[in-house]
Amino acid sequence: MPSPAPVTGPVVGVIGGGQLARMMGPAATELGIELRVLAEAPDSCAVPAAASHEVGDYKDLATLLSFADGVDVITFDHEHVPNEHLEALLTAGVAVEPRPTALVHAQDKIVMRRAVEKLGLPNPRWAAVKSVEDLVAFAEGRWPVVLKTPRGGYDGKGVLVVPSESEARNGTAAAWFAESGFEHLLAEEAVPFTRELSALVARTPTGEVRSWPVVESIQVDGVCDEVLAPAPGLDPEVEQAAESAARTLATELGVTGVVAVELFDVPGRGFLVNELAMRPHNSGHWSMDGAVTGQFEQHLRAVLDLPLGDTGLLGTATVMKNVLGGENTDLFSGFTRVMSSVPEAKVHLYGKGVRPGRKVGHVNVTAPAGAPAPETNTGQSGQDSADQRMSALRDRAREAAALLRDGA
Picture 1 (spheres, one colour):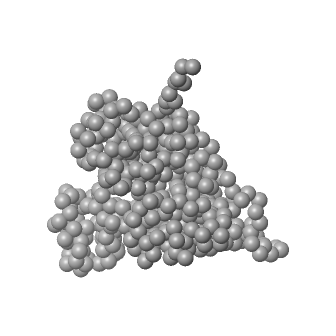
Picture 2: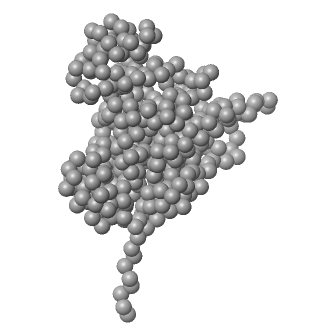
Picture 3: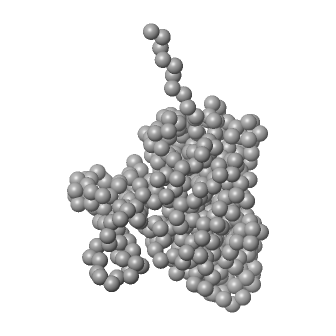
């Protein structure tokens, strides 16, 4: 008998070998997509999850051109590839999604602020500043203000809260202007927000857009700690406006793939746009187990211009809890306890070496559709019941994450 024809499918190249590329792996396998990863090192955590990989420097154009040979589309685990290299890939006929004209809005916070302003979406008060004098003039005596590097910041890095004019002139801010290497820094008002939200959408090159419910993102020391999906008690008008803003940004900026629009929830002002991420995002990890189509599958669909999947909830709510490294370096030592004590928890580990404070995994816990809130009392309001359910989910997710972090 003749040999069967080889199974062939689209080839997606991912620049970056971190946990986001790793979590694209199972989604790619299920869809019959070949995932190739350009990893920073042989032991990058995405390597075991990819069909193939190369090790190379994403800042080297020759490496990028070689990696792109034979792939159907290039996408990203991070936003740090030099934009001029991405333009060179396009010139060479390589499909790059999202395109550099869109990606620059996630790479450069000043470019992003200008775009949000041009689109008439709600920005904090902001300015591009070149000096301490510019910063003091921007503050207009209303301290504190927030100073950010336009590029390279994440998880609280590249952000400085300046409490007073004295600190601006004599403290770390002055050193930032002298040593940052940027012509301008970004100054923003210190927004009096009550919580942080995230509106996640996906868009195809031909313009189909799908959105997930707006979620609450809880930060600890500048790092995402928990995500509550959907955001509890969110005014429906604010939710609709936030989702609409995310769709507008994805469409008007020409984004392809998943984009996370991080927002401040501000009493009396609705919401303000905080930052953009044009890739799967920590605030969307809950969707892996809490939505019909998770963000990693959706991102692959989008960059290949395939029809997007349903983003409806699989339960009434989902809590995502990050697992941060602690003193225990063997996460598997807690597997038996977490699986027996919190059997409903879905565990996602990143295959990374453990060090205190490092993101090494996350857990998702979903309340099934129709599940009653624990200890529901007669006469409880619907919101009270929902709050109680969310509180119980958070407790379970925290328990699972702690067992993984601390071990047996």
